[in-house]
Image (cartoon, rainbow, N blue to C red; front, side, top):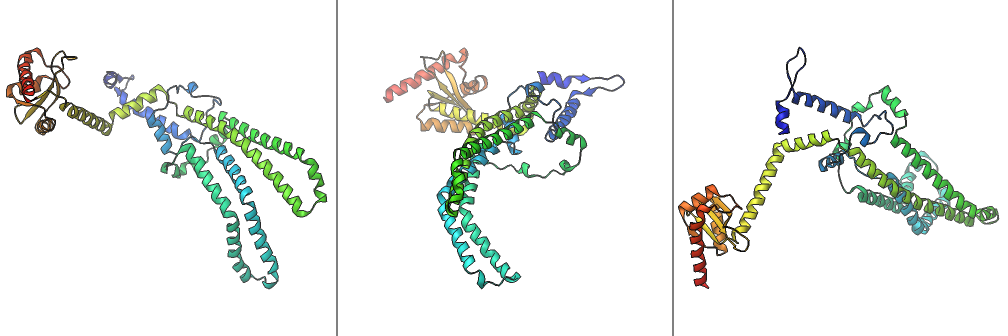
Length: 405
């Protein structure tokens, strides 16, 4: 009813012809889409405005979420990924440290022991370069593979496996210089202030943990002048490893809260106004393909339900080939016999075939079949004018079943 009145409504201006409301809506939608595109690169002047302040009070629809996901807009915390990579990589290095150290010392010893055999010339150095690259990858490849697996796993846990081709498109329009946008970026927004706060918190965590651990081991640090080179390097490596592990653990804890915050901000960014919600519903409702799929699904569901009810029917009334009506009656909960299925042509033949498969009696009565098909809907009780005839048919069917038993 609302759409009907909207399409009939006209807006008139003095000296101008009537303008259809659809034209005004179209212009508003174009302006809105332009604002949505520019919103990526601009900051609102209301620095601390939230979704409620902008009138976006409605939860995002599944279609809105899917469109955002297709554009690469998903919930994830980069801090959680980087902290997880740091922690797992350090743990892996603690387990593979002996292997890496042995490989590195072996290559170093080989190079230093054969350095007098190599003439340093451009040709010889170019031949040594692949050997150095291979040695480097042999030492670091296990750690790099572990870091890559951790990065993929953490990202998959946050956003799942998805591909967003729209996010890979390069937009040349964003490369145009705009002094107003540069000025707006210099003004700290609410999100920028939050990011500054997170950065400050991470720096504070790193400094505090480093200070606490170094302060605890300070006396041993002073004694490094009296120990050998390998012992000193081992102590420094262990101290550094301890600092990194503790920092990574604390950063993961902070990142979990950051992930929850990112989820909240993501939902806030997708919140919709009542007008947007109404427009999306109209688009979906007016899409011919959507309507066609909905009707097809409804027909399929109704047909499946109807076919399942045929096996429970008491009798099938036919004319005998063009029409078929399935009647069911249960005195415990039915006031009158009910039509549970009906069809004509191929559907009628299908009803008859299912009835034969389930030993449902089939009775030919052309006038009754035609009248029931035209006047009684599926799931409805028959009208009083058919009581007598249908009662006689049901009585006949009951007698046949009693004789067969």
